[in-house]
Image 1 (cartoon, protein in one colour):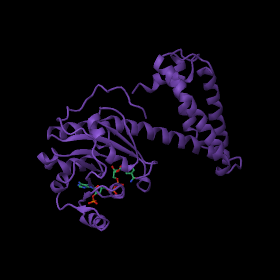
Image 2: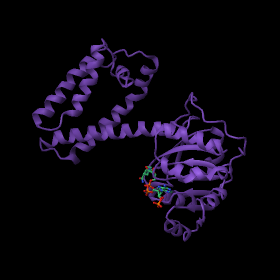
Image 3: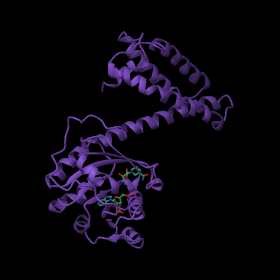
Length: 310
Ligand code: FVH
């Protein structure tokens, strides 16, 4: 992902601090040793970083201590051990439950919170921890534990650029980093957008698979075709993004009204095949709204106007 223009929302200005990139092998602390936290700690160890760990249930920290990690007896000790502290707990209430009492000991480290949550929770965390002098980056892990430490693991981050730059060498041990901008909420928003894309593609594939099964076509036979369709549509996105940026949707390929007639065919096919027709009906509902507003002669991205409404 490329750098985006700065978002209007900015976290409190971080206190001036070291901006020279940390040497590789910089000490790192990991708070939370669940399935993901353990993978994060192991990736730092494998990359040669002195790694301090802490977990609410000590047994998980002992396992990592046997692999070379230092087990902190308290959260305060863990926070004081490294200039970079990665937090990966169940949810944001757990993060505040754990770090809320930490107070001043937050001031000496940069928190990188990789816990799943909303953009509002991220902005609130940046504000609350900033009040204690902590530097704060919010993040979202677009990967499962087994791929952590490989290029396949995409880690989205947002928050002050100097803090990202300082700790980028150490964080790079986790996978492929993407710093999205200063607004701490950006990583969560990109995560939500990315998951929407993922489930939309998977649901569309399942719809087609169910339809074709009724004609005796096996899922493994349809899958390569579906892959080609997904890749083909993905190729249209940059050009359609230009249309959205310009606010102009000339029908160079097909008008929305043409698409809507094809959507009727999807609904008819699903109903006559006796499979679920909710997804094609949703397509048609959205298209009909734009057509009712007189946009039927324009290209498909004109539907952005419908998605912009609550
Ligand atoms: N696992 C995955 O594939 C996904 C990939 C995408 C990102 N998610 C997010 O990562 C966060 C952690 O997920 P997890 O799979 O590691 O979750 P668990 O294995 O359940 O570990 C949870 C850890 O959180 C600790 N914890 C929970 N509540 C508290 C609390 N109040 N105070 C202190 N620690 C707390 C828990 O401790 P314990 O139960 O071992 O004592 C675990 O260390 C999550 O946001 C995913 O959405 C993972």
